[in-house]
Length: 481
Ligand code: AMP
Ligand code: MG
Image (cartoon, rainbow, N blue to C red; front, side):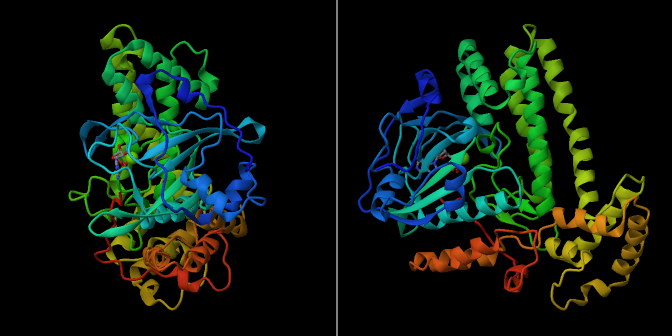
């Protein structure tokens, strides 16, 4: 019974400081509820000769492939600004699967039982939040944004105690690795320089081999991670994604979006938008995501200080200079991204004002972020007289003038916009609708939603119902452990 796993586990060979060897706790009666065939293909896995029952045993962790050493990884994290030692409290790393062209992927079960890092938690996860991670991570992937993926969700056949009894579930998460800023914080907190060197070398070998023989590996690593994280957060700002819980343990060194909890997409443009019920002060609001990225990178830099230079003051100076550069890198990437959203080629000194005028108008008039750009691309968004507003009409004239000054044709400009602006995003009420149906064992709604989200930049017939926001006032998301 094999689906084509090809494991080569390197992280589990690191010393015990980095992890705990542990097996997933078997579950009573697992059933697969969703499988990601597209991802399976990318991973060179084949489910076709395996029964549903066997797949359920595999993706619940009841049947572990031979020659694997399953582990829970140690990490720490600043959660809403407070430092805590954490670790995989409800996840187990099955191993590293090698796909074709030697690409290496972590395969992890989330919701697979208690580990030594569980603290007071039960190590389990609930169906709704695991399917939510599946939907949103796949949506982020089809939006062409770097992310961990979801290979399967299995119902465990066991009830999990939350505010009431809920169906337990396990998500199979696939990531280029699960090394987080928090992993570095954990090792740095232990104050063993050999372990810190090991982690830096391991991370570079796995993600940034181009700097493996550089003179200052730690500083170069900081720069490369900053570059990746900048790109990621600009992509989130492009599509209106709010991660919701950007703690340092939820920031991957690879630059992938990781740990989908209370995340959601913004409808009406408002930089202060927060959906997470626990984010009382808006620390992780839409417009705070870039400064929080910088804050998290500063925590990463602190871990690397002992390796950046033997002299602590010199090391701090070098790290600070690097982190201070975040603003410039971000602003440039953000401005270019917004130019793309508006089909602007080249740069004009008034571009920033033109962009900010539109954003301010959207905020004042409660305009939908996604659909405003659809309107500008002449994509049907239903009857809406919002855009007859005098201020918008005037802005539109300025924008048209700027587009005409492009050195390329109007068609090229529109092409650029179409590649940048999604037509369809996972609207909050649609996600909720799919989860509600799943709790009643109806998985057709989620499948239809996923199939509609498959090509988010293409206008297809029959997606109108997925294009419009519902009234989001008061929409709240939960961490969903
Ligand atoms: P998260 O909110 O998923 O980023 O998790 C933060 C920390 O809490 C991690 O160390 C998790 O492993 C741990 N955790 C979350 N839920 C549970 C649970 N049900 N049981 C044990 N640990 C958990
Ligand atoms: Mg986490």
